[in-house]
Image (tube, rainbow, N blue to C red; front, side, top):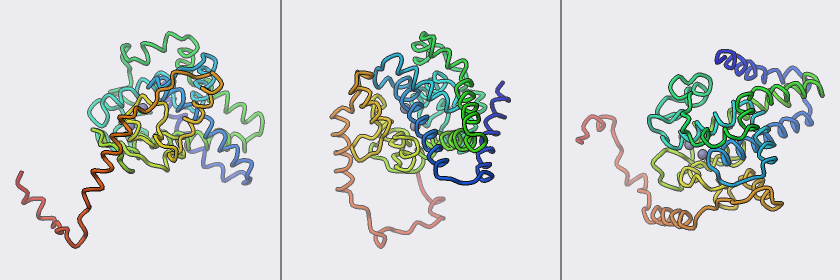
Length: 298
Ligand SMILES: [Zn+2]
Ligand SMILES: [Zn+2]
C-alpha cells in the first residue's frame, strides 16, 4: 500500500511537467490558482488550525466541507496529517520530530518522511487528534478513504476539460501545494526571520506565507500555536485567517483563539533589545581564520 502511494505521488509529481505539452492559456493559469489556493485554505484551516491546534470551533457541515477540500490536496488523511503535526510541535527540531531538516536532513524532512516514515508513521491512540476527532464518523471516513477526494477531483477535471484541465486543475496545483506545505517544514526551519526566540529553529518567511496561505509566519506560530491567525499583524498576509474571520462573521465559526497581549509585548521587548545591541561594523569585526576553529578552548 505504501509502495502504491509512493508510486502515485511520483507519477503526479512528474505529470505536472506535461503542462508544456498543452497550449498555454491564462484561463488555465486561473484554474491552477483556484485549485492550489482553495485546497490550501481547506488544508490549513481544517487539518492545521482546527484539528491540530483547535484554534477555533466551527459548524459541523463547514468542518466537513473544509476537511473534504483539504483531503483533496492528496496529503493523506486529516487525522494522520494533524496527528503528525502535533508531534512536530511537541519535539520541534529535536529527536521525535517527524520532519526536521536539522535532525534528519533536507530530503527526508521535505518528502521522505511523508512517503515512508519507518519510525514515526504510526500515531499513538493517545495522540489528542486521534483520541478526540476519530469519534466523528464523517472525519474518520475521510481519514480512512483519503484517496477518494483527490481521485474524484482528478476525474472531474478530466471529464470537464480533458487533458488540459487534468494537468492544470489537478496535477500541477497538487504538486505546487505539496511543496508549499512541505516548505513550511523545511524552508521555514532554515530561512527567514525570527521575531521570537523560540527553542526550535522556526522562521517567518513571506514567500512561503504567500503560497501556503498564511502558514509562512511559522516563527509566530511556534511561539503561540493556539492562535487562529499565523500572521500576527495586519501586514502579515494570512488568507486562512481572513476566511476564519469571515466564517465567524456569519456564525459558522466561534471560540476564535486570539494572540494574547503578552505575546505582542514579548515581540516588542525582543525588538527593543535587538535595537539596543548595534551590530558591529565590518571594520570592527575581527576576521575569523579557519584555524581558529581548532584553537578554540571550550
Ligand atoms: Zn515547524
Ligand atoms: Zn502548527
